[in-house]
Length: 257
Image (cartoon, rainbow, N blue to C red; front, side):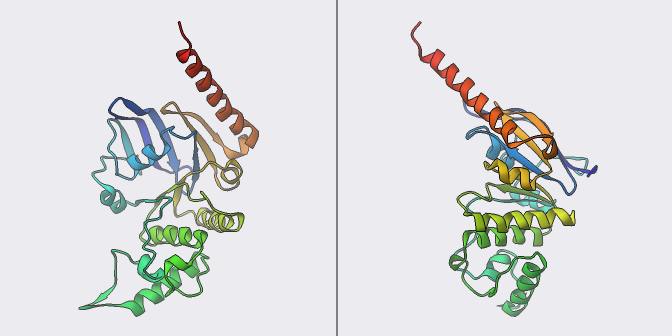
């Protein structure tokens, strides 16, 4: 994993008086799974939204496959292979699995949708990725959370995403559903075709599936290590230390002079 597919250099983002990102430097290698961790409000989602073209940075630069890019929109980011799967998935519950797989990319035999082709291709692609959906005609609302998340990931990969951003894909999932997504990420990593940044709070899951871990604190990446060189205890201690420092600073500020 020596080929760099994404680099973020000195990125900052402010929202009025709030500084969300101060000076972020990050890189992602081809076929790598990078875990992005940090306390609530650390700026993780803001960073993901900059990389996917939803927000523009106030300063700093992005490079994709070594070339500088200025992302104009989410569609622009998708056109160069960057896609995001958010916690809310952007699936339409009332539509079938295969219609969701081809949402906004429908196969048409003018003037009608080619439902037969979409059903066949959706089934083939899900099977190829190891996502077990027995009936692709079923409404998404009837599936488990893990299955819905898997469909959202599969849709992005099928759309030729080469940099996949996963924002809390394991949130509010049970062990069985979480295992489904971890296995899917593991399969994608084994293929080496997709590079992934995953935001997660469960350090055990991060250590299980990620190659490297970045910690975002105070608007900067303060920690960058291969998972083989860290541990659950070290990650927990870092975040707990940040929490205690913040609490002590708030107490000092609140105390009367």
